[in-house]
Length: 200
Length: 89
Image 1 (cartoon, helix red, strand yellow):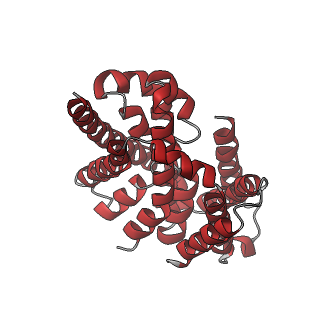
Image 2 (cartoon, chains in turn yellow, green):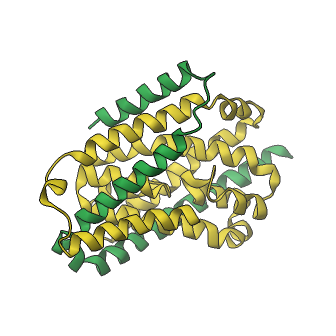
């Protein structure tokens, strides 16, 4: 939670400095963020490829639970596609790109800003922060009405770190490997799906 | 557009090649880069009067999209949960 507050503070700080004109033009009018993003993705890749321990733990998982990341993707994207019919300002591809963040607000908002501009990027930032907060706050409610897998599904890409303690508390400790596996797959899927939906 | 993903794949391969070497600092580097990028996103928002004027609408849109995404995933999780419980019996 502390990490999230710091990240959001940087966004707000940037917005305030930008709004009051404290930022020199050359910082805005170039592709700096694109190169930094490439560097970030290289580091994200490094941390995945380097971590063979996590990969090995997935072997102990009941194969039926392999379906959970897929269920999360299908459910999220179907919900986002349907809601686009109500939101007249947004296309289906746009709402699906926002939904493809799966709570990974830092990465998804950065990607969407790069591809579709800061407005949709900000929607992605807010939406995916709200998703993480909902997963944290509504976990007991979700277990009661939607079963023990629902907090994991709603937690999206965050279920291997920020929302993991809450999931273990309300769904049960036996969901540790499922939760980490789910978060791992969704984490990986974010750059692919966001890029895919931004290409329309 | 796919250049960014190519960088990630390159990272995965490099990370795997050096899997016996500990990379303790990598998560710190990732955190700092994310700070920088979100700061830059903030700057872009702050210098764009149209987005500032529409912040209320943007917030409501974000909330609506999230509720749809959360409900959709919860329903799919419920279906999968029932399927898993049924096949265990």
